[in-house]
Length: 154
Image (cartoon, rainbow, N blue to C red; front, side, top):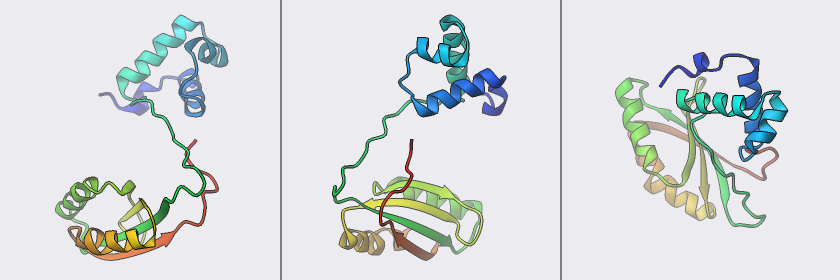
């Protein structure tokens, strides 16, 4: 796969990406019109962006219904050490945890920031005791419970 920064050739490619971020299901004809290309030229550019890895896939964002019972917990993890071995072991273990929806390697005071979804505080307590505190290399866990989503994925 090419370097994605190299694959975006110009402002038209950047415009295609902006439109797709807002509507990944837009028809090629509508996309072409929005970025000022013919449908065939637009499709050719779209396929190049996909083949180069700039566009890695398409997904559906599912809105949780109010009162769905899902509790979002933002958790910061600090490791004992930041060696490659510690990072690799921790990341492999986190990938096996279905409650972890997102996990980011961070700069700053903590090493990782995770977005976790559980059914309730008791479920998070179980996850904290049985999973998070047993992840390889964990020195400190700091968690915050989300009250509500103000801006989410678009």
